[in-house]
Image (cartoon, rainbow, N blue to C red; front, top):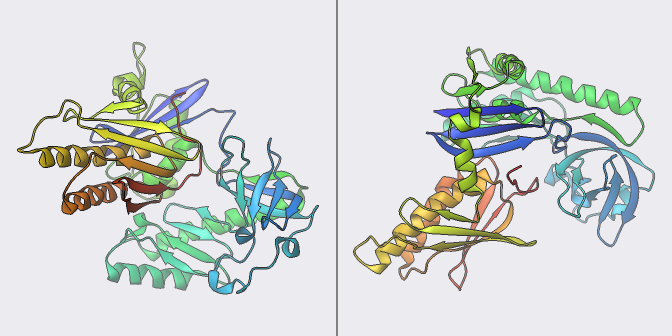
Length: 394
């Protein structure tokens, strides 16, 4: 069972996702500074750079957004030209176009935008111009995959594209069609607004963090949602009614003595999980350091001395570290290149076991990651999609 714990304060809303009491996701949002990831804008092209095959567009933010040539071409690879045209053939300075934010602005870089539009719903992701149907790789049964793909092909029209999400497993065609129709209406509103305003203009902004988590990870029949605000609880109940027929109960936390995060032990977990040095239950520890280019994670045996021999002790520590690292990159939302310096192991089968444990735990993460493999120096390389600045305690 999962628990969504939402702490609403005047200056900030925080959300913690717990699995069996352990923190697995954390998000914070300032009411006046909501992120723009997934938002749609009518943009004006301000600079076209043929040498970079990219353009900079004004979306009304502090920094101009970056638009790469691949994000201008047709989203279906089979419909793209074999030889990419110059960006100057596709875009002109002063041209107004509709774009969607693919990555938030990070550091000195502006946001990255695309014309490959997608609107996430509860059961599907709607892509108005993609012209294909895909099924989540996490749905493994071939029979169910075939059923869902056929359903998607039956429902889509014209150049529409559909990605069928993991939660759609065993869902009826009626539920998926309702989701599709709502997203079609949303896209129609975006297009209408684009025709009525001048660039730069915001056309659509994604849901709040609480609404996004309800949409993406909450299962009303199994999970618990606890909020310390009656107003937010009412909004959450409306959202839950929209995503499915199951009746979900939202609990309201009331206490004058302590905050909801203190009551559920979340503040204590956050202090531990966002520290540079994180101790493992078995006595080992990991150290997490960040550079501009990548994140480095070092694993140490620390106080752990168990095992019948050195290789067994090292392997057991590395396996525990792999499980914890998979959770921490999700909690801290670490993206980009990640290099893990596990303790040296002599046997190849032990290295395979450690990387297999890491890959298995990363499957629970909604953000896409890829374990590349071991380097000659015995370091494990992995990447995790980076769409926002890494979280810090606010």
